[in-house]
Image 1 (cartoon, one colour):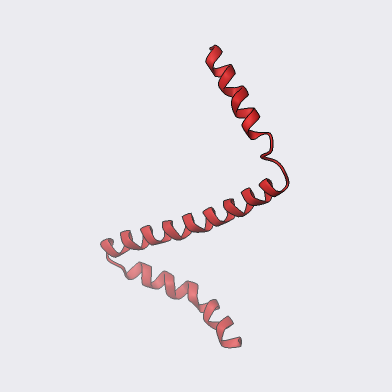
Image 2 (spheres, one colour):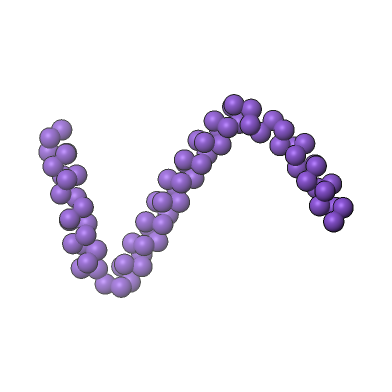
Amino acid sequence: MNSIVLEQKNLRPEIIQRVEAMDDESLVVLHRILLNIEKERLWSELSAEAEQDRCSGKFERLPEIIRQARVELGKG
């Protein structure tokens, strides 16, 4: 376990060093990969929060609210 902690502690400088040594094309690929990782993390977070909201009943009135908004938008 201790070696894992040490590896994680040294990981950031190692990654920074590798990024700094990358050519432009590799950097673009890495950027796309990082964006996908972030997108997946955010999607998981949002999905979990939405599920909590659904279970707590926050969406129960949603169809009614949508109908009302459509009626009001149709008036304008």
